Image 1 (cartoon, rainbow, N blue to C red):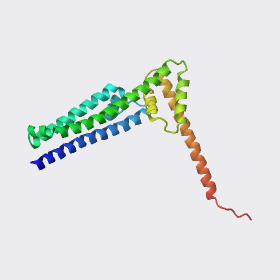
Image 2: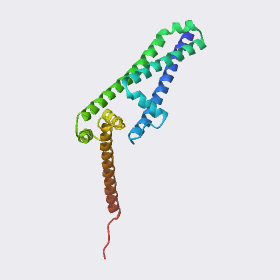
Image 3: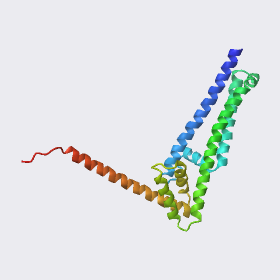
Image 4: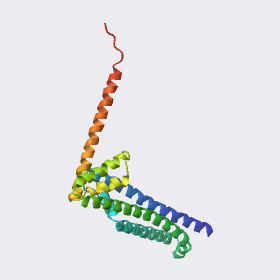
Length: 212
């Protein structure tokens, strides 16, 4: 009997790991598609992209997603346990069920907290632009400050800026213009760098000459 209970516990843990792995994989794919859309100044173009846009739209959405994940997890564990044995066996494994539920809750809570931080950053940027008459100037200073911290800078700030650029209002248009200008500047800089490297390579390949 003890061996059977150990087997049920093992199956419950595997079930929880599988569901959480699927959730993380779908979330990662959705994030990549959403980033691809907003970084090219497009509206979310797929179901996954729209799903991720909904998730990061507000803190409450991330909480709803977390609750939904918990419901799916517990329902699947209950169904699987009863199909393998009976309801009493599930009650005997309640500690294991609570353990995996708490771990899943911690993961979803961590995600919701990141969404809240992104929303706060986005609102802070939008507020600073809203009260300024020179919205493009303020947006340009924000972008330049990010570049001072390296090519990537603060990923959360970049994410918030590209989300703001989706807004159909003067704030969104200002941020979008600045980001597009900066992107064009970077493309020209990379082209000049590539041309310089190619020119240097051509010169070094000429080799020594023999003059008569």
